[in-house]
Length: 342
Image 1 (tube, rainbow, N blue to C red):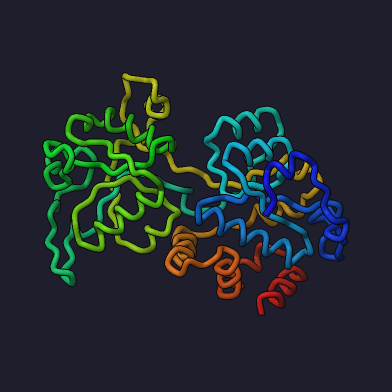
Image 2: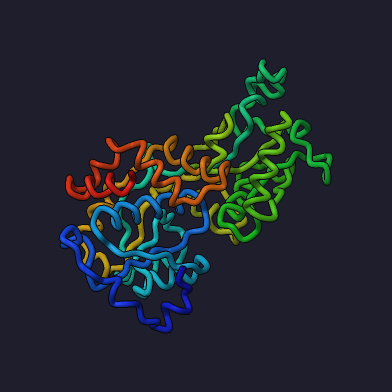
């Protein structure tokens, strides 16, 4: 992997990497190695491996991963020191300013069904029970966030027994700030604690531990994610999305917040503008890549349960789903990818 420091310092790459191929014409510039952001979360890693495999094996492109923090790699994307950031949620100021300046473009629509979703969840057995595990429904009438006050004893916070616990994101995550505002907007802050997990791994571990033991738990989560494929969950209904109220929820400094569900997020691919201009064929491939929530959730579950590298799982996925991805590439490229997967 290449570090941000190496990129910015202008470390030279071997000219052998730039050998053109017949299939690379109009898809990837032969003079360039495409630098992809080394994303830290599983779904982003899987999508990245999927696209790199198609471009490298199907069209003879050359690519590599660039490691670094979110801020550093997004800054590199704006400066064209990095060319592609897969699974872009378009939430940071760096990306938004990069678009305003014409430095980056967002292409594609990676997730069908309206995009990524977020919200408050409980295990299905809390609402419906689980006869196979001998678990009775403990909150059969729990449907919306407005129902939560009467169930605060069920989700009791051990540190504040008079309140329920809503397991939230780690401090510093965008969703942690949103959840803090939502508890105020939904008038739940008097009945529930906003319990921040220490890390993303700790959040997953706490959810999995409770579900494996059949215990009630209220938590924030999102899709795509491996837990969505692993467990049966129920998302609580929230007030309808309201653009003005959503602005108050997005700004942690606003005290007078009003209720709004989180809008679904279109997952795109961030590319530097110079790369987009010189590699229209590569953009055409990226623009076609799209998976269903079940497909991406199952893929990342494979990564977590098997502790498998995203490259390995991506190749397995391509091998098992030729009818899907062959529509994204040319016939010649499809033949080359298929041959490489054998």
